[in-house]
Amino acid sequence: MPEFRVVIGDPHAKADDPVVKVKVKGVEDIQWTQEEKEREKLPICKVNPNLLKKIKANELGIITLRFRQEDKKINITCRAQLDNNLPEDQVLISLELLGEKVGAEEAEAEAFRAKAWQIHLKGAAAERLIGLKIGDKFDGSIVGLPGVELEIRGGSDNSGFPMHPGIPGGVKKKVLLSGPPGFHPREKGERRRKTVRGNTIVEDIVQINTRIVYPPHFKPLIE
Image 1 (spheres, rainbow, N blue to C red):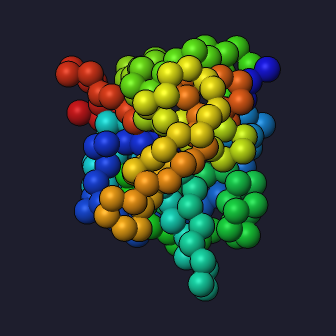
Image 2: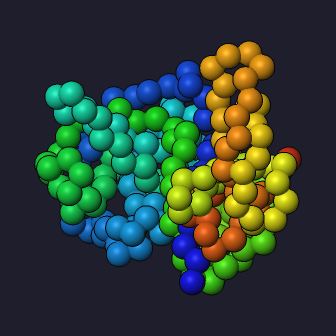
């Protein structure tokens, strides 16, 4: 059975989107489910709706919490559940999740609109992507995003060879390249023969890179 890591990019998330400092508290009544642990779904976090508006995450309600510990950063991307009773600067998440990732029951973090995240697909859901090509679109509900489509932008196989839009099918072959994907020239006019995969998703593909396509009349989580 095929298994894929689907990388989802949000084109509406910008580098200069607001970042807000928040207090993150772990609570026992928010469960960190097995599906979430295996990255088949995003974990849940409870937030005040005004926080989503502040960080411009009111469309999908998917946010990233960034924790800073000495010389490293820890990111948790989660799907927001709205709670008007929470202070705007507080976020609640699973106590087990916060303890596993951060090693604390409470911590300060930076909250911002998620720019990209991963969902793992397997079984029947993964099989629905077999045969699709770079440039094709599929229903976002497969990865928990109803109301939008995902456009396939590329991917890579179990050996790390990238999919190439100019090679039909799911074959693996050596081709002469003058640029990405598969080759980044250091000098102008440089060309190299590199191994790439075709433009079609087959079972040997392990990662699929996608971008959200919003419909013209998309209804956001918060107006």
